[in-house]
Length: 343
Ligand code: ACO
Image 1 (cartoon, protein in one colour):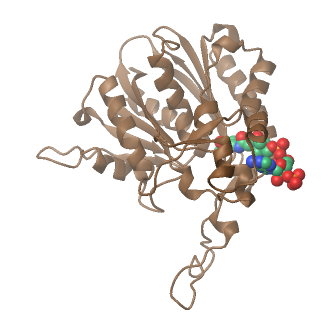
Image 2 (cartoon, rainbow, N blue to C red):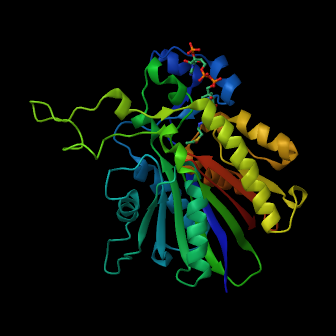
Image 3 (cartoon, rainbow, N blue to C red):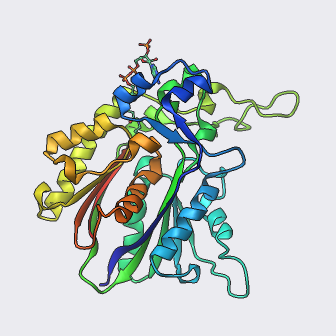
């Protein structure tokens, strides 16, 4: 069976930097830098301008990843798009990205399958497991995975929404998972979910039990209440479950591969909250120099956090060929996952 390795990466963050205090200055939210930084480690995040959506952010990240992998768009066999802020209810953002990358154009279009993975903060690990399975099974040689989020469009930017809006930012990052006969690549993964907490971190948007699914006023326009329109998060519950599941996922990944934390050269943790990540690192005994972070400058970019870390770490020399890497994520659902990769 061939192996599946990460052959290239790319990233894109919007230009506009929103510092913690800008949430008060620009949006009038009753918050401040000290509150946000103390509880999350976040200093600033990027917001995309009006007119831009997740698949737009994904385009430069995807192009960079494909180039970095040393392949061309025509060599892609599949696109997997992880997002919790998709362009539309349907279709998935993957097909919009395919079109924007020009894969449908010209005399030899590349009508690759496109799959959206709606697993929020765990989307990258779920996507990696899916891509590696396809590649190892021989069904694909090169799979593009993109994690892209346009959170700024769908957060309550008033004081009412501050618990969520102070944490999230916009970004896109991508990797290419390619086939190789070399002894390297994605060794395995562990995925899990607990649907009992489905409503503890969610954005409902509409109610499909209703007829029609959004109440319609006399003016023929849909009306959505703030409870339906904006994200809902039970912050403390998320925190408790995140640390528990991330520790469990990492331990399981290590035991499945008969390795210990000392065999791992670099840990890539989902970037939701520095206090979550520090707690997990302390419990497992991971030294600071084996972790990379970017939460302070981008906030929680959900499906994009781990590929963003990959794109940055491969460019600044912290992630090099031959290293053993452990990835772990936790998010809405609740869903979680970990993966072990020999770089
Ligand atoms: N600025 C100022 N005050 C705030 C803010 C803010 N941005 N947000 C909430 N508060 C207020 C609350 O209104 C509350 O006020 P009250 O006591 O008058 O009611 C007070 O601060 C305390 O609120 P708590 O929610 O109890 O604060 P807590 O200490 O739990 O911190 C936080 C909240 C940071 C969200 C924390 O629970 C947390 O980090 N949870 C994990 C969240 C997370 O990581 N989510 C994403 C992971 S999953 C994914 O990535 C999809």
